[in-house]
Image (tube, rainbow, N blue to C red):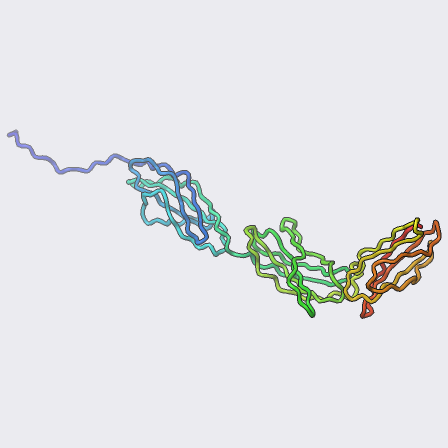
Length: 309
């Protein structure tokens, strides 16, 4: 009433802010071979933005762990992870937070594939047999998920050991875990191993080596080819053959006319691969067979051919 003024104590009045910022978008990232991760996303435009929080997980279905103790202002982030483990990918999410601690929703999850620095686990040869048709191998494939092929290697053992030779590469998509190696010499010792390869080119350690000796008679391979060619101008039949052996003593040539049984016709030196038969009768069917005899007395199965003169 006397014109004297006296103010009250001040009171803080804040408007209600319950509106969070928008979720970050365009989250991208890279991983180098040392395990350093670089993340980047589009910056938010809210004027009351406090910063971002970054989350990481090894499993997209598991809970994500927060990597930042407090909101960071930059729209980039550098992380370091271990890459020599069995998790092929790493997953990230980012959220924005304003100055009233209102969190946005998570960004779209980013899945980054780790550099593959781990070779696949080796396969295991589970079974093998040596027959007259060759060596049959079976193996348990590598347990790695990214294996693209299994490769069979062979080495001949003996006086002069050779280097490992690639025999067969089998794609994983073919779902085959066995192989018959028929390109072998009889009575010879071989070693085998199998190696797995993943899609980045890493090879596993070789499987446990197995050693097997082929039987004395690998019939199908000792004489893989035997042909008869009629030459009516020269009045002859030319026989030629191919042999897979380095220790040949001689060849036994058998002949039969018509339906008569085969009988020994000629004995031919082991360094020959052909013979010309001139003792012929016109319009006669001839059956020939050839047999390889090695220096140790091993005899191959008869290789037969039929021709009409």
